[in-house]
Image (tube, rainbow, N blue to C red; front, top):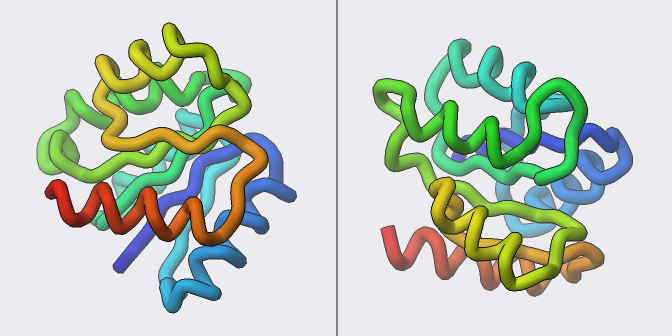
Length: 122
């Protein structure tokens, strides 16, 4: 599978990518914000997007809404990994098109469970 990891923290991108690698997923693109994420999507298809919410230039919610409006990407699974834990935030993310939601900090097992849940529901 090909993943796109979008987070303004290079450390968090590295943590997510290392987690994916441990899960046997080695094809990962990365972007520092939603605008960069959209540019990466123009370079070819991805099988799943993992994005943060709070980023400069374009938030994760704005990014997801843009992705959902793009030809060929409307059904790409999206996992949001964020510090936003309020119920209203989770509802907003789901309405924007997120398939599942992880609150930081997380464990590799949590990421695996959420990815599996998204792929099973697909």
